Length: 279
Image (cartoon, rainbow, N blue to C red; front, side, top):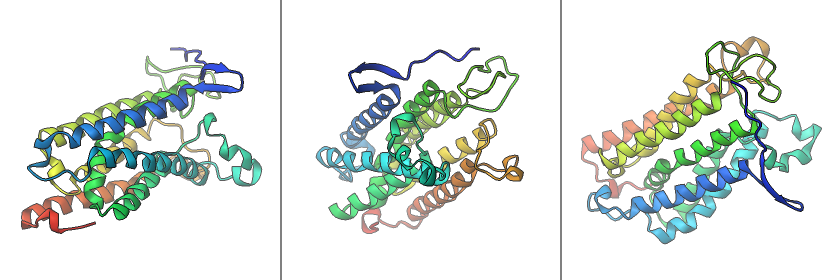
């Protein structure tokens, strides 16, 4: 399959260019925001408790989360994947419209935003994280679609019938459309898993469980898909066939998520009242 000839710019008015990449982030943030609001407006999900935040507080939180995504994602990309830009072309660090955002950096930024917002508003950090987690795959889905449109983060060479040729810089051989795999798993599948947990299993009532499930789910999907993604160029040659930067960054997510899940169910088993355990 030939890579479609996408124009990364939707339309342009003078110097102002509207790009698919930016639109994907806007769509993910706006839809995630409205989804979080819908969760706090569904009383049965909270088991008679008052939700950790009201719609007005979520309106305030979205600004913090947006800053966390943008600043954390860009700083993480520079530190994890392109540190050479710091001394070779520092002005490119500001050119986020060209692509180059790290999920793990963005996640770190969002975690810090949640921590600071919760502390400033007297909220339980883990319960606020549980509200943000179910909305995160929405942004992941649109972000991975944007990666495909930009022709970046393509996969390894492959002989599968759906292999894509013509990725910019990807050579003449077919490659895995790993961006679409990630959109399907890290975005759509993870959203549905979290939806099942929140609406059927009522895990919003288990402090830390939704956050833990998100971390574990993403880490498992990312670790498995790293086998079809192109190895990171900055990794030492003898390590590229063994481990990738995505693997190294996802392992702490997996461990942290498992700890959160263990803690959520341990509290339930011990009969610990969640309201008495603050973040």
